[in-house]
Image 1 (tube, rainbow, N blue to C red):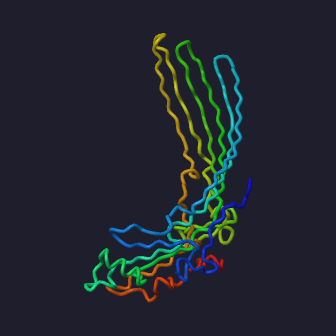
Image 2: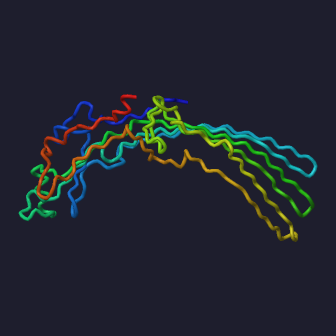
Image 3: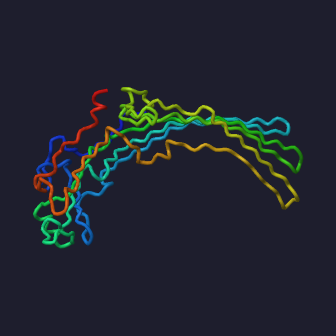
Length: 283
């Protein structure tokens, strides 16, 4: 299994590119321009640069033994999961908002003056983000089971079984992974001030019993009933949204007030002042 995800993101402003005449662009792709009600939103779509590669490696085996009225089956399953993803989000290219207040004589937002503000480059608010790096999630799942189909009489069969599940805590290739500890309120970073699982452990007591029966009332009627416990997989439920505090950093330039524009013009671009968490860099 490859431990380093091969997902190539676009340039993320390391060389401060100029895009659409914007001198300070946070990326080499077009930012979003929020023009309010009545206008579409030009610029990059939030999922344009999302990349995802899934790999699952699985081994399974079982054996069956018939002993008198018992059909006993046991087996095991081992699965390794990989989820390589680059998910920059919607703000990595930057987003600029125009309201029309700057050119409006009444300092009120309206669709016509919004275009005037946009043409003048009078930005009301803006935002950009340093996205999460390309990451590769890793974990494995172990399952063991034994079951017995016991034919007590010609009409009654019992189904008895027990399954054991273990799912390892998630790790991230290159340890680009962090979380906030709710107990200590500290930022834990894999491989720096925490283990590569961020000090999380998998539950080792996931035993799942299964009980059922089948009863033949007549040759045309069979009554069946069963009970079982099942454990879901945390890894597969995470989807594409996993926070990376400290790695994913957002810089906002808030609305400075009614009728007041940002000190920078659209052609200049917003100041690229965001950096990854100083806590991470100093650990």
